[in-house]
Image (cartoon, rainbow, N blue to C red; front, side):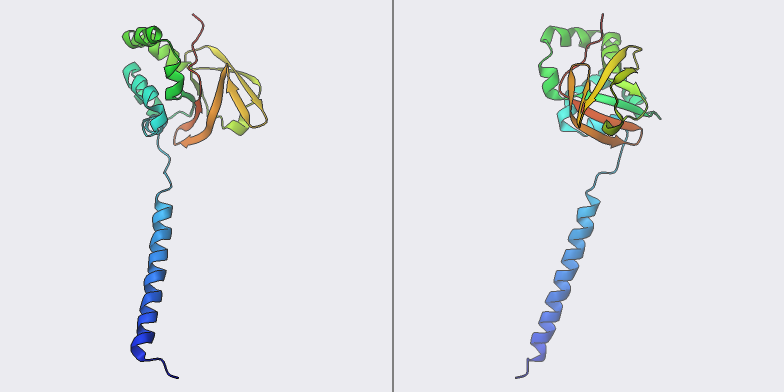
Length: 169
C-alpha cells in the first residue's frame, strides 16, 4: 500500500517543526543561565538579600562592591536581619558610618570559594579579624553558618549566611 504524498509531506513538516521547537527550547534554556555580575548587582538581584541590598545603598558601599575587588562577601539573608533587635537596626540606619563598619565586617579581601576555606582568621574590610571554619562541606564565619555558598560574581564571590555579624565595640 502506498502512502499519499500529502501525508508524507505533513509528517516531514511535523518532524521539522518538532526539531525546530526542540532547538529553540535548548537555546532558550541555555540563555537563562545567569551571567556573573558584580557583587553589588548579585546582592541586588537576589530576593533573599533585599534587606542587605538596601543597607548597602544606605551605607554608600555600592560602588565598593562594584569595584575591582576581588572580595568575598558573607551576606546575611533577610531572615538574619529579622533576628536583629529593631533598636539596633534603627541605630544603624541613623548612623551610616556605624552601618558601614558593620557591613564591612562581612567582607574580606580576595575570592574565597567554600572549598578554599580553612580553619583560620581573616581580616575584614573594617580591619577586624573574623574566624572562618570548615567541617566537611559546612562553612561558618564567627557564629554564622553559610546557607548558600559560591555565588560567583565578576569581582569575587558571595556566600549567604544565616546571622548578622556584629563587630566588637
